[in-house]
Amino acid sequence: MRLLLVEDDATLSSRLRADLEQTGFAVDVANNGIDATFMGESEPYDIAVLDLGLPGRPGLEVLRHWRESGNPLPVLILTARDAWHEKVDGFKAGADDYLGKPFHSPELIARLQALLRRGVARPHGPLRVAGLALDEDTQTVGILATDETFDLTGTEFRLLRYFMLHPGQVLSKSRLAEHIYDFDTERDSNVLEVYINRLRRKLGRDLIATRRGQGYVFGLDAG
Ligand code: CA
View 1 (cartoon, helix red, strand yellow):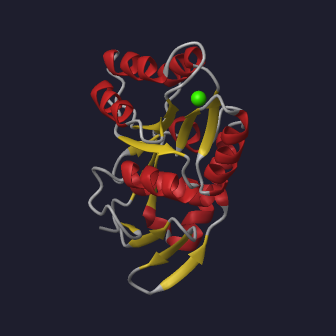
View 2: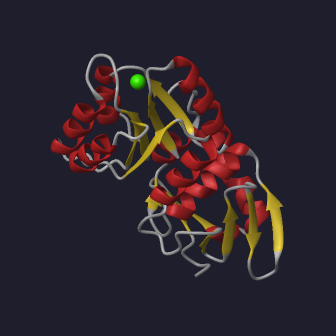
View 3: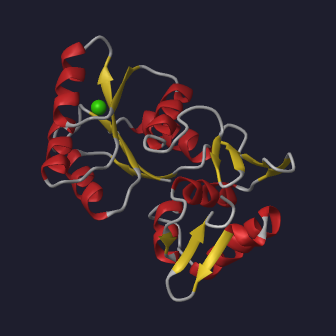
């Protein structure tokens, strides 16, 4: 999942970035409202964490701008502690959730995971799709029919989670790469193929179908 982190406090943003990357997010950081506005419009993020007090352009204006241009990106805002009016203004501007500073990274991560699963049947516990159960805390996957569990590498986990959140859809290599790698990572679609084949070897060949010239479809045969 590709995440835009908008935070001008360099200490906080580098700590959050490390914690988020460890949880399998591909993270890009903006430290001001102008860059944030532009990045949110030009890159296909899956979710954003938006501080409200920002140089250049306040977070609320960034959010309003995204919403006015029809951008449905899920956004969690970071508010000052006890500033209840910021939360109200944030929701009115189109925020999906909020967290008051200071906070612990595990709470932020849990809220982001819950936001990403809206619209997927099961909001809590392992993500269950196509006969698999993905545990986001341990980054392992279980095959429900055989009760086998497999460890996943970071890239395998990010790739499988994206597939499981978009079952039955044709996903091109470039779309997959855009959503599992951050801006600074070189995106090599041949490498992606290697990871897809590794997932097939672990979890079954039919789980990820190849559509020649179009991309991949996850979970069509497995139910
Ligand atoms: Ca700030």
